[in-house]
Image (cartoon, rainbow, N blue to C red; front, side):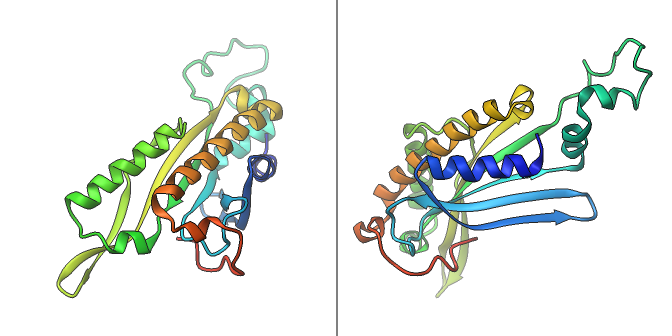
Length: 217
């Protein structure tokens, strides 16, 4: 499996799961030879200017590149001759690609809540909604960005992230990877619908609008 294949599978399966994709980025860190892919998405039928969306992203480091090009057998030749008994693979962890979904939360709904217990309760509630929607990745605590406004702390942004590890056979078989990514995208779609019911105004769930600009973190 190569970086480009995983990116293509992610885009394809996101659309198959009923997600509208936009704002796609692919970057390369030339110092560490790490590549990063990201794409934002909302459910099909939502207004384009909605203030809630998810960013699907993964990193592909130099170890994953070597693994995808050479494979485990070829990488053994770095340590010993092909005919010698292999001892390092049992202890050497196989590369892992982490697929992450970052849900950006609506500013306008956060700004009206003072920092404190009410904001913490909202974070817990949103996390519970994602779990109830079937999100089975590792879910972090909801993170809020706060600012001092007129002598009071106010939330000016927030996000909730969930992550899934792609490793072993999944990284070596495009069909297995597509199946796993398809299920993750389905979960992200359901989580967005649940979060939308709790956070969005009714008109934001209707088709309309003309610009997706400015929605990324």
